[in-house]
Image 1: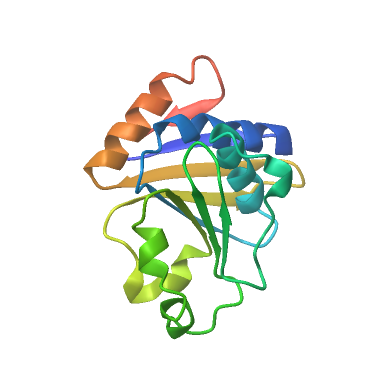
Image 2 (image 1 turned 30 degrees about the horizontal axis):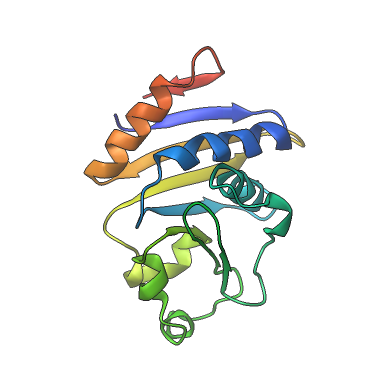
Length: 164
């Protein structure tokens, strides 16, 4: 499976999609999020948190600190690299301990990782369609993530989705 697309028509659907991904995330899973400001990355992360039994209301964009950590069924390491100007900033916080650690890592603005981009991860891209609609594209990078996407897409039932 190369990719999976979903047209989210509301914030509630984006939350639900994140929550649906959470059960497939194992210890050490990495989810890299791409998209413009306001495209739904943090909302999707709140959904993942909800699926990991973390109160989604505690989750916010850690824009002024590179990392927020939330305790739940599995720890959630929420990176937001929006304000990061050079990769040295993330090296200073020991990012590898969290990115490759004993929880689930979600990285907003993952394109800023540059050479530090992991070899395997679930890529999720958010594209504005209009005020409420977002095209959410999943693309697995690595064997584990291919299997994860296949299982998730099979469980989606009759919802608006397109598999490529």
